[in-house]
Image (cartoon, rainbow, N blue to C red; front, side):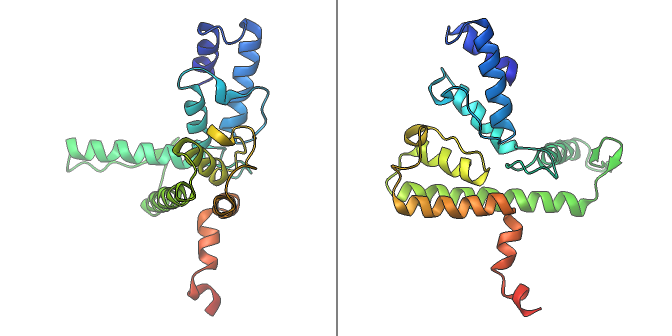
Length: 199
């Protein structure tokens, strides 16, 4: 992604060689790790670069880090399990393990990752619709919900400079998204289950 970003900045004459390398590399690392620092207004960068950078934030940091996003290990497991299912269609009787390095991942962990992904997508969609229902345009709603849920900070569209002009109702939805993203989705959702409080 760093190579794509830097090349795009050079080819479109957005920056000279050195500034393109510096701004491009820094911004990709900052957004992908959900650090949220910014040395340039990447929302004004050419083509699909702002969108690609924002998608990188959904992957987020490494497992155990304070970075937001779905975490790299979950994305790796989702991709590997997807490949396993394709191989099962080709070879129905094959026993294919999902491995990270040389270690086989138990099916219970793979199912938990898919459960997390399903809940993540569902909550993202519900919050996206909620923010759009407050009158926010689609690009701003998509990027602010993604930014809040992934603990990124910067957004695109009307919120690229600041979130101050968003409606109050949209801000409350984004506050919930930030809590879900910062504390992990299942941790927060467990607090709302009656079984947790009966213990």
